[in-house]
Length: 350
Image 1 (tube, helix red, strand yellow):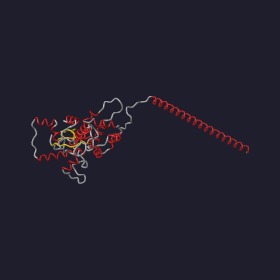
Image 2 (cartoon, one colour):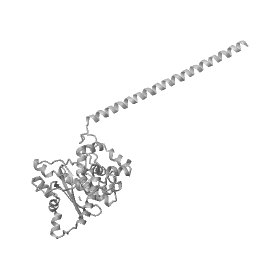
Image 3 (cartoon, helix red, strand yellow):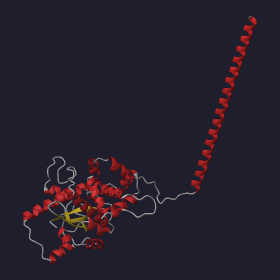
Image 4 (tube, helix red, strand yellow):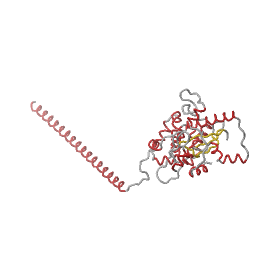
């Protein structure tokens, strides 16, 4: 009996030992498999790193040269168009999105560029930059920093845009003193004590500009400017200059003052000193007149805070003298032109 028990105990001990050896063998095999997988993974990563390093070296050897000194950011306009509400868009660009789309559809073909090099600036972005400059009057450098473009690019965009019977009046467009010495200082220095060119325009009953002439030196009298235009010649040829009573003159002046108030109020570039040459100031002014007319045709009203014809504190209409001073409208003595550059501008502003 005792021998049987000893034999059973021995068999159990032998079976437990073989179980331990089997478990130990399985653990060793799992460790070996894990080590092999780790080695294979490390070898794969090393191969990937070597391959990417070779590609980087090849890219560094073949340098792609860009025509731009600085990297271009194309996200400003996409952000404006997708995130700006209608109210914010109009506050920023002075027109609604509907009016913007109307203008863009009319001039898109003129804004598109046939280019074979890097990504061109979209017509939408070009129009947006131009409207921002005309509406807010910011410097080219400020707009360039905002839009992620070069200063020369912004200048090229703004200057590429195209101009425009009824009550007639004039106002001053501030500019820097053009070259020409003392003669230019005399010709372009107005009675309000700054340098400017004169915008002479005709406005209908809806405050739309239907004729305009810009570029005359600021010391020129309104009568001299108007009599130097082709419109005056045509009116004289057809004997179409009626006598206007004083009451009609007063009403006509109210219309022109209202039109100029909305024009300069919406497009603030006309209120600030224009750093461009007189010929460029002329183009900018006439472009603003076209945009002004489009806004009226599309019912795109101007914000009351921007309308210079109203007092911002009382919201009441300003009197004629105060308004004309705020708009820098013309009222100067007659002086003969003595500068060759002014004479050339006069002939070109017809």
